[in-house]
Length: 262
Image 1 (spheres, rainbow, N blue to C red):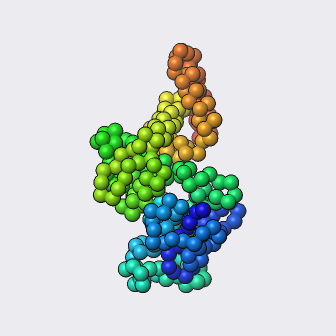
Image 2: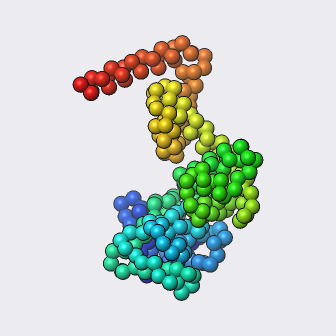
């Protein structure tokens, strides 16, 4: 059973699901369960938007990393439960949330234990911070990822529920063995992609870094393993052939680029 909590307000939470939009009004749970809105530690809680930020265009998810974006012109008003609440006009004010597999358990999507791209990024950040400092703090993670505190808190809670990190509020954060294994896999994918873009495709390092960040989550594991094998093939045991192939490609690309620019 999964719970999707949508805390007070009238209106709409739009979640893209392929060609359809699932609209949640008031407190509902995609028809699966009533929301236990006050229990953020509930292991079945998929998302929890409290709408208590009091300003800005982001509705932070207190149970995970499914932050929402305010659309239209909803107004921040004094809250009846907390300090703030959102007032919607019932016409074109709503909150959009990115697609997440945990929203669709009834149609064969991965279970809640599956990691979103964002959670993988958090794991990767914690891995590097822990490697440098032996442990991470929430502020270190926020600084490294350039995100705000509430977003970090939600992600840490989601990772802790999956038993990937050791976490309690205001304490140091470390990876569990399960988390470290998952983080190493993300770091490995990122490193191989960067190496491929820079050493083989001769891409700009900054562009390579951005490209690796996007593609490390998107490539199916089978393709990633083949790419790793290809990189290793060019760099181990066949250095001369591999280098010739790389240089041939660079010359070809430069020639084609010059032709296209003429």
